[in-house]
Structures are given as C-alpha cells and as structure tokens.
Length: 519
Image 1: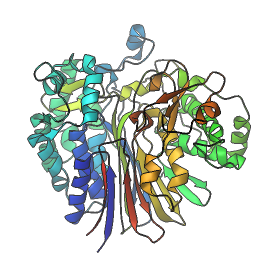
Image 2 (image 1 turned 60 degrees about the vertical axis):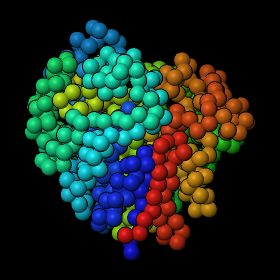
Image 3 (image 1 turned 45 degrees about the vertical axis):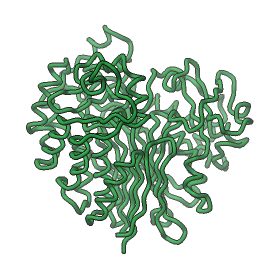
Image 4 (image 1 turned 120 degrees about the horizontal axis):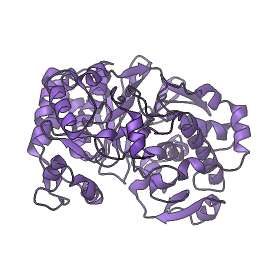
C-alpha cells in the first residue's frame, strides 16, 4: 500500500484528488484533478482563463519549475493606454493576457502523470454540469465585486440570474464551461489555443474589446526550468524563478540567515522579519518583470554581504504603500505520494473574478494578470507587447538531504512570501501539528494592495497584543483584523513526518480539506 496525500482550499477539489489516487494516479494526477475542479467551484480565485506556476518533483529526484503565465497581446499599444491612465486597468479587456492555466495543466501532466487528461478532468466536467453549492467565501466575493460583475453580460447571467447575487448554498451551474472542459478532456490542451475553444475564445474576447489574436494564443507555451534554491539551516528551499516573485521569499529568509537570526513572526524579532520582507518587496519593485526582457539578478540579491548591509538601513515602506488595490485571489494545491512524486500547483485569476469578464460561448472567466504590468517607461515590469507580467504566485518545496520534507503553497497576492515565511519555523518543527501551523495567527504588511492607504501591518486579532508595538514603526501603521481572515492568505501543506509518513493540513481560513490515503 502506497501512502498519498493532498490538500486544497475546497473540499470538492480534495475529493477529486483522492479519487484520482484511488484510480491509480500519483501526486501529479491528484493535483491536476483538483485543479480542474477548483476552476469550477472557486471561480472568484481561479479559472481556465487564468495563469499558474508549479513545482513538480517527478519521482526521480528532479524538481521542475513550470511557468504557466501568458504574455500581453502583440498588437497592444502601451502609448494608447498611457493616454487613458497612469496605471494598468484592474478590469476589462486590456487587463487580460494570454491565459496559461490550460497549457500548464498539459505541461505538468507530461512530467509524469499516470492517468489521461480525459480521466483527470471528469470531476470538473461533472461539477460544472450538475452544479455545486456556493460557499460563504464565494458568496462574499460576488457581493464585494458586484459593481464590476453586473457590467458584464456573462458574469451577470451567471452570478445574478434574478437580478440579485447568488447567496451561499445556491447551486452554481456552468453548462458552457462544462462543454469547454469536456472538449479539453477529449482533444487536449491544444484545443484551448489553436482548436475550437481557442476560436470561440478569441472571437468572444475581440468582441469584448481585447487585442488578443489567434497568433497570440497559438504562440503560447509553458516554460519548464530549474527552480531557485536556498540553503536554510540544513534545509533546501525551492521555488519558481522570475517572472514569479519566488525570489522575494528566499531573499527575506536569506537576510535573516545573514544576521544569524531565527524567523520569529510573533515575538520580539518579528520586527526583523518585517524588515527583511519589506527589503525583499522593495527589490521586487526594482527588478521583477519578464526575465526575457530584463533579467533579474537573483544571485546578487541573495548575496549575504549585500543583505547584511541592507538590513542595517532604515526600514523601507515605498514599495508597499504605492501599490494599487489588489487582493490576490489564488488557490494552492499541495500533493505528494510515497513514490517520491510531489506537486505544488498555484493557479489564479489575480483579483476576485479577474478581469470581470466571462466569455459566454465557452463559459471561461478571464483573469486580469495584465495588472502586473506598469505603464511607467523603463519600469522592470513595463508593459511591452508579447511580454509577461510580474507575477505573485510562489510555490514552495522543502527538502533535507535530498529528501522531500514539505510541499507548501498559499493565496495572498504580493503577501505570499510573508505568509510562507511565517509558516516556516513551525512547519519545519516535526513536533508542531499542521493544524497548529496553519491555525496560528498571522499578519501581512502592505498598503493599497491590502486595503490601506498607508503602509500598514494588518494583524489578526488573536495574535499577541505585544505585536502592535513590535511591528509599528515610523511611517508604518498597525491595524487589527478579524481572526481567521482571508487577507492573511489560506495555505495548504503536505509534510513528511519523522517516521516517513505523510501528513496533510488545510488552512481553516478556506473551504478546504486535507487527506492522506493508502492505495
């Protein structure tokens, strides 16, 4: 009997992964089955019209980074957008880049799946056709973004069928999306880019005002590369390279390691963790974009001597305060099995419901990842035709002595490195249960990107009271938020225990579930 584990932010997706395991699949199969279901049941956070980043350990000891992000239209005119605004639109056709999720699914499957895509997408097709009850979190997101959603006929028809937002418990049926997923199951991912689905999508997008073309879709490819790595106190941390912000997580941890300081999220050294995270966020704004256009000097950014010097400078606030409002709506899927296969797959539409547009023939909701571009000439993430935007998705695999120790991912937009760093110490302590790791109070620092006009550390209400004075600094405010708040992300973890047995944990801030099965 082989032990297999999975954790996702929605119970239906976790069940799809368990069923894939029981049908003979490995962790890749389970993650992909769950990813398909999440694109149906969590449309505010992910979609077939979104992007993904993933880390895949294929069972032979090799780990691959999969970049499933798409590029801006080749016919996009940045000058025209600059005449309209000084920042990228947060919704509408100009916020859409080529969706990379579906191609990413195909790339991940090719790294060692045991089951065909027709089997893996079956639960997603069924969920879309038969319908699923709307969760309280989805219902809250529909209400929160109602003003944008009702402007689009497709979104309005789906989520406001009687003129009122669908409430929690209502059945969400998506027949057009079911047909799209069924076509993908039989014809493969290429149908999304050069086949029938692609034709329907492009026609519908251009009708909505998008500049994306058949050539843009046909040219799209996932990128498979080596992950970034960092040695941390005997562990090896792996994450995705740019245009992911993964290096920011490694940089913050490396900064504390350079000072010989432990990661401490809730004690007196929390101010040093905050300093390290803001330092990394500042470098994200200075350097992160499409590396094919402007390479990111990751080795230089992680150099210990540089980090020691930077940690001695005044605390930075500019990078967080200046950002536009943007809640990172994202799902993380973590899966591993005893054969050595492991996956951290994160897929997203970026803002809740992405661009706010639904292409009606296909039922596909389109993301607004173009929001990751800047309209400032010379910026590292400057909007240029056929380039990919700066991305927030930050998968994490942890090894020790070349053996897998943990698979970790979270939602949370730009705060993903902050959330992962806070989880790390307890996660690496085998004496701490995963329910305690994930249930412990957290905080995130940001500005307009987390709903505050000034740079603010938002702290969950059940965190120690002393954190207010520890984290408050000149030009940095603190604010208490409700406990178990989605603002501090919902994370998923699969961990290998000291006895080699798999453990799985799901964040209580989500609608998810975790499972360990023997097959």
